[in-house]
Amino acid sequence: MNPTQVTKRRRLTRQAGVTLIEMLVVVTIIALFAAVVGPRLFKAADGAKVTAARTQINSFNQALLLYKNSTGNFPSNDQGLKALRTKPSDVPNWDGPYLQADVPLDPWGREFLYKFPGALPDEPDIISLGADGQPGGTGINQDISSSSTR
Image 1 (cartoon, rainbow, N blue to C red):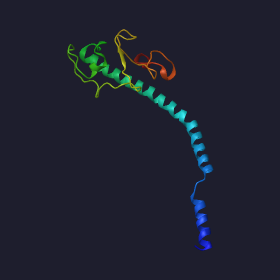
Image 2 (image 1 turned 30 degrees about the horizontal axis):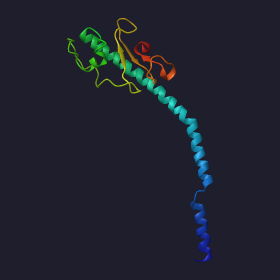
Image 3 (image 1 turned 60 degrees about the horizontal axis):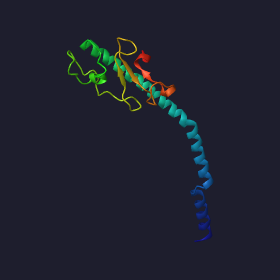
Image 4 (image 1 turned 120 degrees about the vertical axis):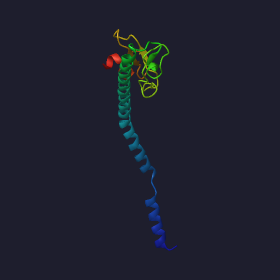
């Protein structure tokens, strides 16, 4: 190789590589961005789950009203929300299914609780126990119920 080719090759080699310092700067910038934006994204996702639970509960309330209009009563505690999809053996005038799909789990992957009578004596309660799955709680762990979404 002549000296001109060697100089050209060295110049190309220097331009083609990434130094360790440049790589560390990029990784640091990405880490800072994740530290600032990440918690905001998780907070938005938690809020979306609460909204989804409220929406599902409102959907159940509508289906329960249709059930009551057909049968004259709300489902018993034993029948629960499953009565909206499958005809209970002892219920005349059942004109369902009242939900288009099986009863979904709450946004945290647990079954909704059904109580009849609920907080109001003539209406059922549908409850999601929130993120922690325990009764009570605050913030994202707070229970979401049909009586609180009315």
